[in-house]
Length: 156
Image (cartoon, rainbow, N blue to C red; front, side):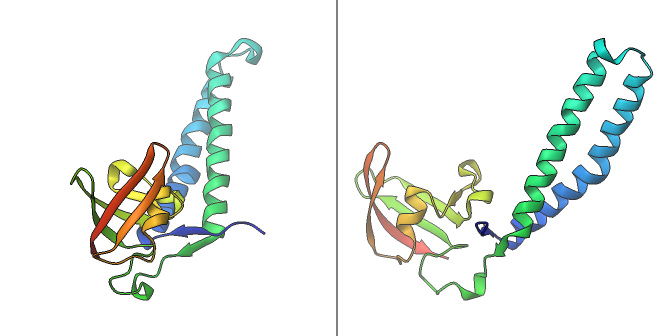
């Protein structure tokens, strides 16, 4: 049995848009490049043809990957999240108890995780440790660099 893919509603929509782009626009573009490259003649020494065929294979792989994610997607239900309790889909403000540094992250499934966008996976050490906690809780988190002691400030 395949593993469920946890997605926000927005994350699912983004994957669907990407899939549509790859299937319609990108595939047509690559097909045209292959057609043009074939017109150059001998395919055994045709770098343009080889590059287009390689890109076609990569796009086919990405299409398959996205289709599999969507097939096993479970949409995170914001309404079902316990009020004030960290769960999938929650945004969390917390502070490093040792340094006083503040952080805000949204807890999402691994597919949507992007630290630069403020989204961490529920399977990451920090994301997993914060689950089921509420404002005021002190949480001890084991991270690759050691121990991180945080205080949950706000859950929304």
